[in-house]
Figure 1 (cartoon, rainbow, N blue to C red):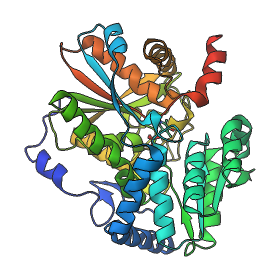
Figure 2 (figure 1 turned 120 degrees about the vertical axis):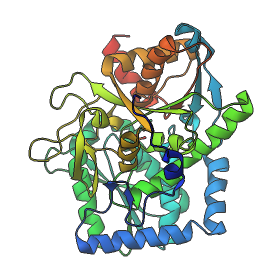
Figure 3 (figure 1 turned 90 degrees about the vertical axis):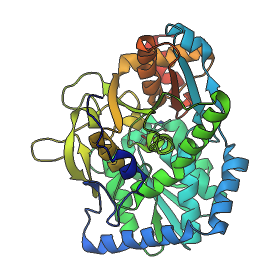
Figure 4 (figure 1 turned 60 degrees about the vertical axis):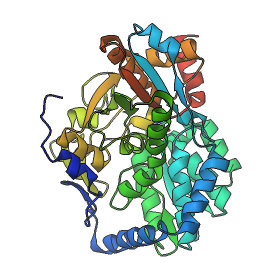
Amino acid sequence: MNKTPPVDLQTLLKQPTPDANGCFGPYGGQAVPPHLKAIMDDIAQAYLAIRQTTAYQDELMALYSHYVGRPSPIYHAKRLSAHCGGQAEIYLKREDLNHTGAHKINHALGEALLAKHMGKTKVIAETGAGQHGVAMATACALVGLPCEIHMGAVDIQKEHPNVTKMKILGATLISVETGTRTLKDAVDSAFEEYLKDPQNFFYAIGSVVGPHPFPMMVRDFQSIIGREAREQFLALKGALPDCVVACVGGGSNAMGMFSGFLTDLAVRLVGVEPSGRGLGLGEHAATLTYGKPGTMHGFHSYMLQDEAGEPQPVYSIASGLDYPSVGPEHSYLKDLGRAEYHAQDDAACLDAFMSLSRLEGIIPALESAHAIAWVMQAARDATPGTRFLVNLSGRGDKDADFVAERLGL
Ligand SMILES: *Cc1c(COP(=O)(O)O)cnc(C)c1O
């Protein structure tokens, strides 16, 4: 961070975001046709009204405690800290201990409850690796709403355990046979279904991306992570962490964590993206690190794009991180110099995955292992006494077989 923050950064960050147009500085917004804009505005209005009500607030908070198991603990990873030279302290926010094993349940419950309070009759979602699909299927089973998950036929083959879970949970699975039969085609298919009856259907986006109000809503649902973490850390250490770290795919777990510390300017905020297996076209998904501003999927943000402005193909060993754009609030925080973004590759991710497993008995999701990888390097170079707080976004059950095979265990 060699940029001097503008004098009014603190004031700027205290203003509620996004603005009335759904923008975070120059990013975000609603890059959609007028009839869709009207629908998005309806959702925004309904959300802003419902979130004020105690009925909604109380129901969501009760589910967070009694169903998800919140607050998730903060854990001092002493053996990992010692392994990294011992001068720095590494703490983990254990979102991996949530029901269903990751942070995604936080926004899935928020969205499902919102759909119910709005009187919707069906929730529609797309899923790539199946994590968002399982979280939505879980939340819909709980609130008693039909759930329809669109998933590329190729992904259905690859992600068998998640497909089985969604079926057991009662979701209708739509196998998408168009295009490359992966995530992007699933988004198109889900959206097409949604447009058949947007009055009665609810489209549940799985990260802080898409047109306004989704980046705001999903951030608000995930902000429970940052609120808890700040309070817990103060209670535990009597001070704030020096540096807060999270992996960034679409950016929801990172935004949830960062939101708790935004105006604490002494706390360094670090997002970690996947540099995959190289920096060539289609070999990584480090959007904020190597992309430039552009528009896709209804919003403006940093984006990995070709000359024509089309999304580039992306890759990461962690399928939850391979998205060619990123939440608009992250783009804003990057330009302001409030948050910094770094990349870690597949090899570093695998090393962190094994280190956390063998030093702490915690098997992380491959997504979260990117954040661990960055902190393992940073801890070695840190001044003595530096305290890092890493958001452990999910557990690695889903990745265990893959890693074992890859490493020949
Ligand atoms: C989906 C997922 C991610 C990436 O999504 P974000 O919106 O960037 O948080 C990270 N970790 C886990 C465990 C996931 O399932």
